[in-house]
Length: 309
Image: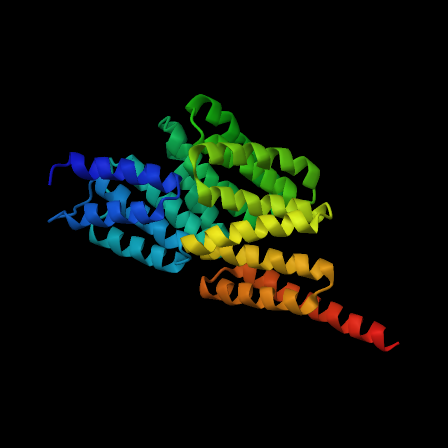
């Protein structure tokens, strides 16, 4: 197979992954790798392998993605001069480890990826690494560091152009404001991000932003608008097989019911979210949804006791 074909497929797959066309990406990757008699360790082939691992992670199979990369690296590691693949391997492995709660090792690998990308002037790849870094900080609840890194990406997006990095950076800044309770301040950032994703036709990213906006509306007391956005996001995420995002939205809908005083429905949504969190081995969500279940039961008991008085 001509070497240009896997490279071309890799570039197309990367663009489609940014647009969340997971079915199209899967076809490109599997067809590209399947056509190779001797896959080898070229940059383009490793690019397809890394995208395959991203697809596994996207569908909640984070541990499987790590095991896949470990196996491929043992069989045919990237060459020493293939800086793009070496950086991509550290980035992807580091991000997966962070999602599994192994933060120290995650940050170490992500820093090992970010430094050579910066030194080599690989600005786009550096921003991809930083996006992973910002999300791991967010999962650790280090919102100041997460916001700082997202703002670095926003500044770089002016130089790089296009919609992708600017949309993600605005979303990340809004997300950090949202989680800290700054709901009014978060909404303009999220709305700007949403407009970019809408212009690019990226429905899955739109759904993610809707869910952040829904949290803001819930915090501002608009339960109706919050539930509308959550339900719209839930439909798209279920359709796309986005287990990680889907379980978060389920839990947030539980929060709406909790605020309404409908504790049994809240518990039902938290339990469904917890089951999925355990399935994808998401320690942060397991802890949060377990806490929410206990809280909902506590509120339910208090409600029953107040009626008995």
